Length: 305
Ligand code: SF4
Image 1: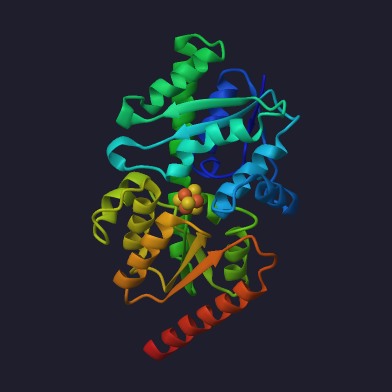
Image 2 (image 1 turned 180 degrees about the vertical axis):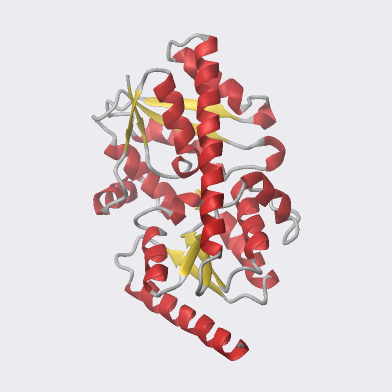
């Protein structure tokens, strides 16, 4: 069977787990292409205006899988228990997709992860594996292989950051949700521009997620969202090792509008550039702001020397 996976939202967190899980069960996976103009346009057409840019892109990626797979995998991941909640948009994704693509041949394959309602991730993946025809033992082995691959990828990202922090030059922490950091239309051009300005971009997801969550409360104690906690923990961990922070937000993100304000108020000794991205074309304005930001950091460093 061919299982389509949209290259958006939690794909950038759990994609390796999903691809390994389905492959171990004997299924082929088809990942939607990197974001391009067609995907963005389609996502905007399908979505209501109130959705954030990241969610609009998700719908565009689902549409890009039409006719290319037997099922499109759209998980509902509500929370990680005590580790916090995911954005409420993730809870609605399977229902929104079912409704949006009701006249299409696209079949939605869903999973429901909600430890607060006694549905752990492990139980959800075992049920999914058995729904796809595997024995309980095979589903469990596929889940364990997927988790091991996923943990390995978290470790590699942490290792990359350790290496980057040893480099000479200006270091900029690029802080955002992983699906914003690596998307071709949101964070990827910003990371590239920072490199072109001879600075070293350090991505905020290059840290063990558990360690990051445990440090979040040193900046803010009562943040409900998993990814926001990890972002705060990454800032707390790296704040004395970097020269500046670029915050990237996909308009109009509710959690980020609150958390970014907190970061700006509480992290006073590091320069912060707050970039809000909508679906506008081109990066000219952003490049100019990044250039000025790096110039300011360079100037500060020269004065301090
Ligand atoms: S956390 Fe923000 S960017 Fe992410 S899905 Fe929710 S509203 Fe969109």
